[in-house]
Image (cartoon, rainbow, N blue to C red):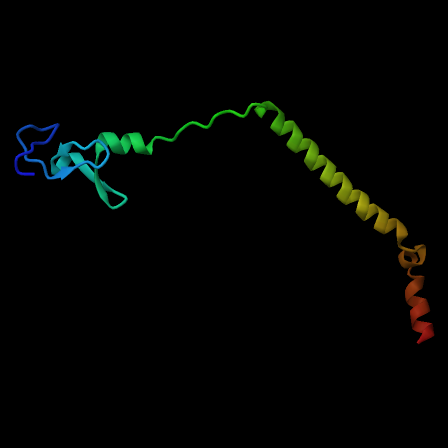
Length: 104
């Protein structure tokens, strides 16, 4: 290491070698990232978020999700309605409670 100089500052001795680009740098030019010393150029390259490739039928996913959501909601409320229709009318009128009180 004593023989190597910083890539950016030729007057300074190198203190670290970047594991990505394999070049030598001084203390000012390297930073610690994930437990290793890495140069700023490699850190910038590694930290860039890669763009996601658009789906082939990406425009179709939103309408499909909306249609699926509406279908699920309709089935839920249809099921609740069927249960409510099967409840006897006496339940709503309050006469079920009267029958229970006289039987016991």
